[in-house]
Length: 102
Image (tube, rainbow, N blue to C red):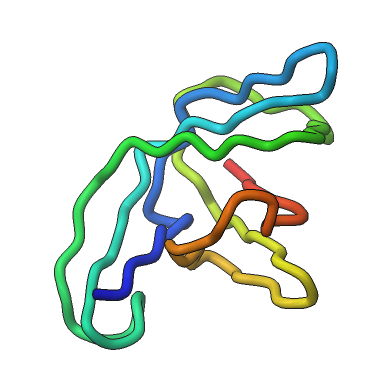
């Protein structure tokens, strides 16, 4: 079963950054599950609470009032950018940057 977070159908609940730069983003994420390609193939979906942990986190601009629905988002892994669909199965330290726009 293939799974992906559909960022544009998710809600950002919290953004936390510590002094040392470690942080996290807490989402009520819409997760699509399918035997085919998430976001394209028929399957099932639902909301799942997910915390994305980031070792070297910076926040650009004002986060605004939370919770807030996510307008768009992406995750960069190596040279691959996953726009609006963040696939499950990543190992620790694979992600290089996360962008979420509420």
